[in-house]
Length: 336
Image (cartoon, rainbow, N blue to C red; front, side, top):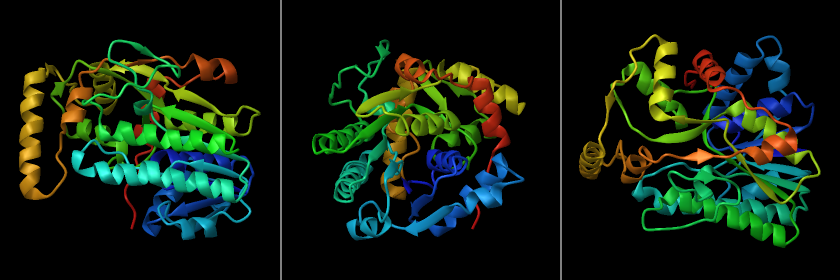
């Protein structure tokens, strides 16, 4: 039996759909039962005729990666684990929570895998844990460099990877995938899909940076192919397209029938905005809309080389146009 953590998230829900088509027994843990309905909506989007039979293959179990007892209860008869659960935040106030969930939670998963003699663990890390520098080409062999500018999210995911490699030293077989920004069918008010909501509401500004983007369907497929193969104890970048933010915004806006952003935002302006955003967050007790880390990354020119996964799996990523089209068609409203 297969266990999936974070199955109600953007990538996790796509992974569940991929696994459901593989005709294997699946168990997925959840914390909020209301979020399961969104996964069902995703199944209905991708397979309107067969979604009921596919969705019924999933056994849902309430558990928390920070609660070892609940994890023990969900690991019975499990042979393979896909660990997708994690926290994404670039706010300094979330640093302790990031470490707790992304490092300690991953350590709990690794320890439980070892205790239950799990055959293989697939851990979803991030390009943020690779340590690439702006203006350079980043590969799986790029050396991690931590500096005072390194954000808490990057540190937490890198720390999570170290827990997985510790598990390897103790006898656990693993695969690590490092996806970039993920797009796909889902709720536009969550995760990386909020960019579609922003463009829909009207966006006049863009920044001069570049980042990697990937289709959730591609990442899910790569995860299954790697985990079911003989490959073990390797990490793989999963980046379909390296695209400047300006080009990405133009493509999304054009497909929406919206006016593309035309104003190139200078660094000094974003510096003022994130400081103001931080100041007002002190009084509102809400997260700042723009943080220092996200402001800095908006100007980084990141380029990722995915030759390793392309060559070893003979894999071809979807185009950014196809990914945007799918995200637009697969917009899922929150269900209660």
